[in-house]
Image (cartoon, rainbow, N blue to C red):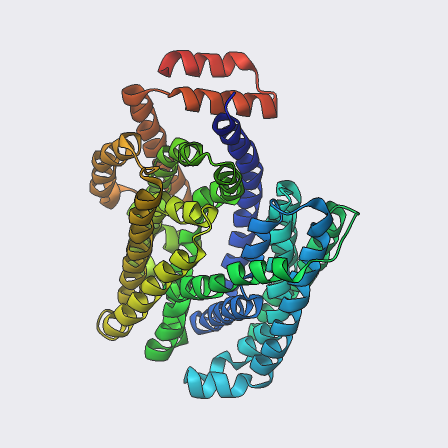
Length: 507
């Protein structure tokens, strides 16, 4: 078996673990979010959304990109250097993030009233500001687990422990009527608990032997990592700056409606997140061995299914978006339906094109990633400033989608230039074309479908299954997809007769 074939098997086996973790995280986080949205006022939920966005940007600035540096360098350095490398990353991030967190938390009143012109979000800003150091250090610990290929432990901390603690604390906040401050604390405290768990697991995963990290290595890691501060900050801007701008232009109630739509579309991120989580280290390893062709093959084998999965998720989130929000979150958030549709289009496109960013990361092109993200961020801010005053929260959604296309489109061109090939192929395009009549039919049927949770799940499921069966009937299964199915069979000890029927029918 070639290195690239083995990498594909590793990606699928590892991604399956991440998918389980992501699914559990989404379910638990979904329940917690619905409780918060239904218990708090629309404005109160907007304040909570603002606080989480502030926490994210604080963790990025305080992290100095060193989490990304660990993902790249831990698989590459000698075992004797791994512990020292990790300690270096933790120390630098702690020194950078602690003063930042204190600065935000102690000046929450000024930030809320002067910068955002909405004093009602002060409590959230104070609580989430204090959590910034914990969030920044948690990112480092989780990236260390990722660099050590500790997928199961990473999934446990990020996808299960973190969200479970949050859910328990939110239920407590509801039970004792703790208000916005209590809900903010319920979101912030899990970062500290998760940090302790992740740091412990990482300590156990690192080799016992340890040598000091020489200055050249520290410089290399820091030079590679620092541009990711710009990359991640730019990523935050084109993903979440709209939260702050909506707050500034429209108020916290509009943030609440927009935040519900933005959170709901997070389900679509699950597909690319799992494969990129495992695929980036695998691709980095293949690139380090000079097997660029194999690196592209790893991603080409999964982009087709990223497209298929995104279309399936688009039925409930894109076509039946208003019904989804009304049934799940309540009628007061229903005006976010069109916003959810626009965001779903953007995320579905990004799921497929975003693989180019992971490939640039594997090639070590951190400066290009920074440039792409910066270009997307600038365009996002510009479009938000122009569109929010005229189109409201729909303008914010359009700005986000445009920035995704700019970032991922530039990365696709750059990968084609540096690798002289692309993970996109005819096999990726066909599922997109086949989806068009299915989506059109679903849109036409929408007015006659009853608004209920049961019908929403049933109709979306029927369309998704029919869509996948048509694709398999037309294109069949490739040799790599058969290999992937055998990997799943091997990992989960599935009865081979079941997969044999599927393979014989569609190969």
